[in-house]
Length: 244
Image (cartoon, rainbow, N blue to C red; front, side, top):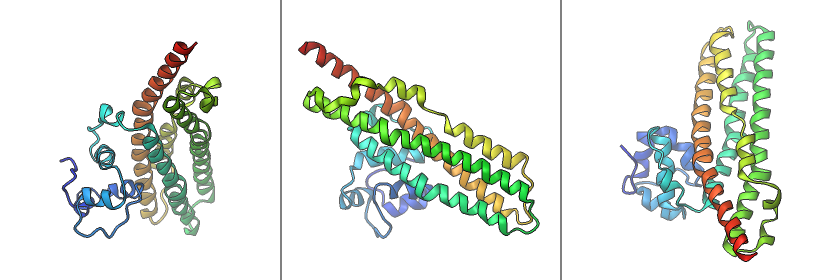
């Protein structure tokens, strides 16, 4: 069952509580009473159609509306992706770190195992952070400059276009999801469980949630954003050729 604009927003969360963090990325907070999805989006000045496509993408793994998502402004996509980055770095990663740190309270847990786990997650965190910073500092500004150049047909507004293209981004797009799978596999197969195994269960649950979110994030980037930007580059090149 897909989420539609006339459903009550509260019912959406009852139907799939995993969408809470996705909904929050739009600036929507709890306390919306009996308002429908449409009414809540209007209240928070959120594009209703974009909201529906995103939440349904996360709600139903078989639903991925490429054509519909490519119909939205690229700046809207980037704004959402940036908010997702903030969620990873400011909330999800620190939450997992706190769970790992709780293992230090387990007196009978081997310190060498704890150190190994902390180091592996630290390395993963650094790789994810560097990946995000690369997108935030180079890729997204380039795309937004490209959008401005197309809107104004002014070459000077797109100076990054000279020495960068989205093809480079595809080559640099590290598979951070595979590293997360490795971490989960180490915990499941090789790390001895502490006396209270609920800590490991909690940690694995959070890692699986992060992995699922990252996969959806990567699909939006790879299957929606990259093709859109390729078309933008082509249009700008054609426009420049016509004027020379």
